[in-house]
Structures are given as C-alpha cells and as structure tokens.
Length: 329
Image (cartoon, rainbow, N blue to C red; front, side):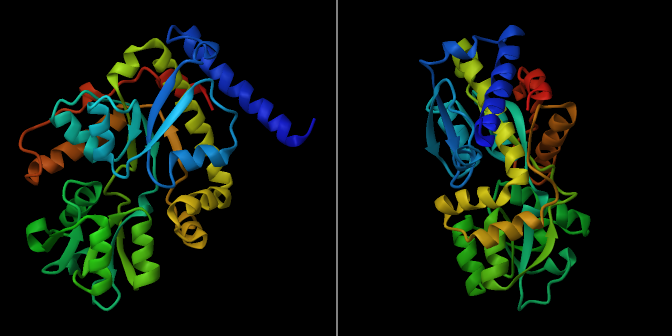
C-alpha cells in the first residue's frame, strides 16, 4: 500500500470513528445514513472551501453546497433567511445577531491569528505608537472586529475614538484611501493589512494581541441543528475542518497555493503573513472563557455607544459538539 493510501485510510478511520462516537453518544444518525443530506455552508474567498480541498480528506458522506459570502454579517443574514446551515465570522456579527435575537447558534470556535488583526500607519507619517493616532485620520469599518480592537488599543493609550478622526470605510475603500494618503492609519484584518504594508509602505503600529480574543465563532442554523441528519453532518464537518486546519499548520505552503487560486494574493505574501503568526489555527469547542471573551466585546461596544442596549451572548452559545471536538482530530 502506498503512503498516500495509508494516510487516506487513517483519515477515513479517524473521521468515521469521531462521527460514530457522536452518534453513539445519542447525537444523531451514523455516517452511512447521510447520503441524502446537503449541508449548505458559507465560506470566504480562499477559506474553508479552499482549505478542505487542499487538505485531501476523503469525500464526506453527504453533499456540501458552498456559498461564498465575504463578511460575517452576510453569513448571519443567510442563516436568518434559512439559506445557510453553517457559517462563521468574528465575534462582532455574532454579537449583533445576539442583540437582534436572531435565529442562530454559535457551536464552535476557529482560533485565528491575532497578528493578522492590525492597525497600520502610512510610512510617510510619524505615527509609531497608538498614542500618535491622536488627531489623525484613522480608517476602520464600523461595527467590525477592527472597530473593537482599535477601541481597546486607544483605551490602552489613554485615548477614545473621539480623539481621532474616524473614517468609516469598507476594507476595499479603505485600502484605496490608504494608498492615496486620504487616511493616516487603518485598523484592518486579514491580508488587506499585508497589502497595506507590502504594496503601500504601511507600518504596523499595533497588532490585536492583548486586545482581541482571536475567536471566530462558527454559526449554525437552529433548523439544521433540530434535524438529526443535518445535525450529524455538521458534527462530521467540524471534525473535517479541525483536521484540515491541523494539516494547514504543517503544510502552509500548500494551503497558501490553494488560497492564491481563489484570492490571487501572492503566495509569498501569504507565507510571510503565516511566518509572523501569533498562534496556529485550531477548531475548538466553546468554553466559559470563550463566552466571557465574547461578552467583553458586547460590554465594550455598549460603552462605546455601538450597541443600543446591554446584550447577553451566553444563551446563543451551544456546546452540543464540545465532547466531539474535545476528542476528535
């Protein structure tokens, strides 16, 4: 037997055993009863779809219908419209979903790189520290994770958002504004921060390390969770996702190539971003610490006037897959 065949057999054994444990624990049907299931899953460009394809896992015992939605709010809205079973995003769209009492549950966490959430300054400015942002034009998308970590960074320097000139810009517009010099600094996530540095001479002022949790909740449709077959398929999908992220941690060049095919971001830029990471990827079960970190986002946004009323996020967290994620790889 060839090495690839051995690895494939091992992957099938691990995934099958994990799903069997879920079914045996009273969770749902076994994998051989999922042939008629179609799981509607949201992805971002260069994300879950590319990751799972690159990782080379065996095909799932159900169909996956991918839908590319490139911000977390769209994932929540699609679940609300019953057009999606599974999606994910930062803690912020999850928070607004909770504030609106939206029909959505948070069932797991993707741990992301905090060094991938940054405030960058134009190289031509004298901005070196967060305190130097006072009076400056700073771009960020209102009501996003960038809004959150920028608020906390400013507070750490004894400043408030009222001490800067806020420019509320979507990422694509902010990148152009940064390139033109219309803004002095930019709070941003993902490879846009890398583009600001490498293509437009940006300088990192501060990462989100210590100012955000790095938790990106996995969103689930309660109707899917109430259907035993789709509930089981979601459990299997989470295991596959967890194994694929573990694979990416040691095969990042291959993952970067898969991302490049969808995003057209240079492989070298993606590798440099990876080399600067604060942590490896992981798919984790919810924990009390997860919920507490999410509640902190709610409290900060309430104080900043972004939320119009206190919001409790705990009722929206669902730990039914925690035993599966705690044991399965």
